[in-house]
Structures are given as structure tokens and as C-alpha cells.
Length: 322
Ligand SMILES: *[C@@H]1O[C@H](CO)[C@@H](O)[C@H](O)[C@H]1NC(C)=O
Ligand SMILES: *[C@@H]1O[C@H](CO)[C@@H](O)[C@H](O)[C@H]1NC(C)=O
Ligand SMILES: *[C@@H]1O[C@H](CO)[C@@H](O)[C@H](O)[C@H]1NC(C)=O
Ligand SMILES: *[C@@H]1O[C@H](CO)[C@@H](O)[C@H](O)[C@H]1NC(C)=O
Ligand SMILES: *[C@@H]1O[C@H](CO)[C@@H](O)[C@H](O)[C@H]1NC(C)=O
Image (cartoon, rainbow, N blue to C red; front, side):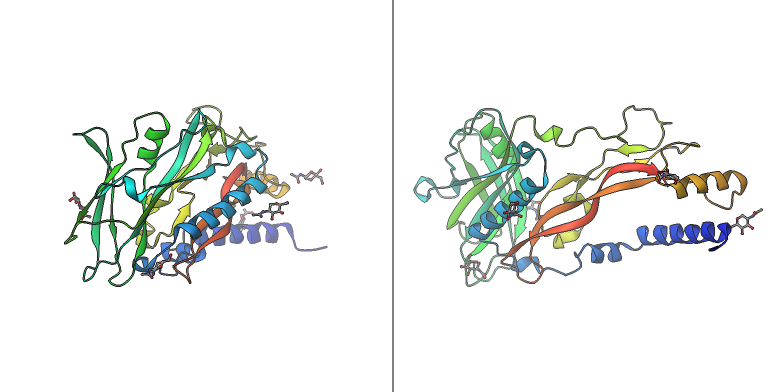
């Protein structure tokens, strides 16, 4: 006849507690499970432009294979800087006008820096040139030169690339190095941009069955929006994720009144039992349908290579009472 009813309930309560403990486990465990514990020596990361383009294309192809709306997947465009057009640390990228109505999802400046002897780290600031006297600060970053060999560095150039593609005059960028003994001249430079037809970015996901529709603070269990920015997660300098920079993870929250959106028949039973015996927890709003996230990141075992990974259950698609 199987186990008595209460044994089932006790078992589920136990499983739920185990889940909570796993979810609330220490941050270290979390990073370990994401495979981010392998400590990159970020001073050694040296991804060539060729490797970057090759792996980015694979990453984007994977996304195209998985989506049912191919127009939401960006394209990679690369603008190489001709060395003859450089004036000292002033780089110019001839950006041919892309089809109108294109917007930049993200963009990176990739430089091959010369060997710089006897310096461990330098601080590079990047400015967008607006006119002869004015420039706009874009980003700054600490980078690690090599004493003997050239080395690849990358910088986030999204704001500058966006403004060029939206029609602002493209007068190039200027690099400023604090900590360099001599003026700093890159050996090669290109701008890589992920571009989308305008307005596609915001409509990546259609409205799903359990998405929240109102701003009612008292609302029932539904899927809320949650944009996760890997940079802000403080994964430390070990953050080796190239793409995506941010993604829509979502979260579940809301009331679970009787007979509302049960995940399973078990949830229904638990909810009924809870009314009679408060020791049994009430059902709560949680993810009922999850999906994976494709990630492009530096190979933990080879700092000159990128790899495409599939991280399971990173996105909540639907919520239910369970
Ligand atoms: C309520 O549930 C708990 C946990 O299953 C059980 O130990 C307890 O005996 C139950 N109480 C009643 C009054 O049924
Ligand atoms: C970085 O990679 C390039 C090839 O892309 C290579 O020529 C260079 O020597 C490497 N630099 C270091 C410091 O390993
Ligand atoms: C995408 O799908 C096509 C056909 O289904 C397959 O040949 C190709 O290898 C896939 N590409 C990737 C990157 O998975
Ligand atoms: C890098 O240099 C800029 C300009 O000299 C300075 O404002 C900034 O504080 C420096 N950043 C770091 C982290 O040293
Ligand atoms: C609950 O059980 C009933 C009866 O077996 C079944 O028809 C129904 O589909 C089940 N509901 C869920 C959510 O599994």
C-alpha cells in the first residue's frame, strides 16, 4: 500500500529544507558550482583577435540554433584600425555605415600591446574624441603587460561605438596610459561590436504565461524581471565571462492563495494539509520552468582560448506555487 500519507509530507518538507540550504549555501560553493572557482590568473589572459572572432561566431551560431526568432540574435561586426591613420595614441576606426536602424548591444576594443619591460601593471584610460578640444571619458582599466612579448587587451567601448553608429561624427579614440614610462603605441587594434536591428533588444522575450502584468504589490505568484549583470556580481577579477554581459534571469514572487497556479498535484495536497497543520509549510512561489544560458568565457585551463558553455537552469521562464 506504500508509505502513509504523512511520511510523504515529511519527506517533502525535508527535501524543501535541503533545497533551501543548498540555495543559501556559501558564496564559494556557488561559484564552484558555476565552474568559476578555477582561479584565472587574469594577468595571463591573452586572447587574440582571431580566437575572439572564431569563438564569438560559434557562440552566436549556437544562439541562432536555439532561438525561434533569429532576429533577436546580434551579429558580430569588426572594424580594423589602419595603422597609417593613427596619430600617436589616437586611434581611428573607419566604421562603414551599417544599415540604418542598427543598435549596438555591446562593443569591445581589442588591442595588441607591445612588450613593456619592468612594469607589472598599467592604468589605461580611453576617451572618445568629440572635436579638437573636447573628449569624452569612456572607460579605464588596469592591464598587465608582458616584459618580453606582445599581449592582447580588451576594453568596453559600448558607449563610443553606440554613438558612432547612431550618427555622431567618428573622430576616433585616444588612449592615455598612466604608469607607462614611454608613450604607449599599440601594434594592432580593432573594434568588435555586436549589433542588432533597432528595437529588437527590448523584445527579446515575449510575454509568457506567468509573467507579472500589474504593479500590484499584493499580487499573486508571478515572474518578475531581473536583469543580472555579471560585472556587478563581484565575481572578482576572476570574472572571465565575455558574453553575455547581462541577461534576463527573472525571479518568482507573490502570494499563493488556495487553488492558485499549483506546480503539481503534490503542491495542491501540501496546500490543503497546511490549512489543517501549520507545521507543514504553505506552498511558495517558485520557478517551475527553467532554461539554460549560453556563456562565452575564457577557458579555465588555457588563458589564450575561449570556450562556449551551457549553464543549466540559469533563467526562470515560469513560476508556480510549490
Ligand atoms: C503536523 O505535521 C507534523 C509534521 O509532519 C507532524 O509531526 C505532526 O504530528 C502533525 N500534527 C498534527 C496535529 O497532525
Ligand atoms: C599573446 O598571444 C600572441 C598571439 O596571439 C602571441 O604572439 C604573444 O606572444 C602572446 N603573449 C604572451 C605574453 O604570451
Ligand atoms: C546549428 O544547427 C545546424 C543544423 O541543425 C548544425 O549543422 C550546426 O552545427 C549547429 N551549430 C552549432 C554551433 O551548434
Ligand atoms: C587610472 O588613471 C586615471 C587617470 O590618471 C585615474 O583617474 C584613476 O584613478 C586611475 N585608476 C586606478 C584604479 O588607478
Ligand atoms: C493531478 O491529478 C489528476 C488526476 O490524476 C490529473 O488529471 C491532473 O493532470 C494532475 N495535475 C497535475 C498538475 O499533474
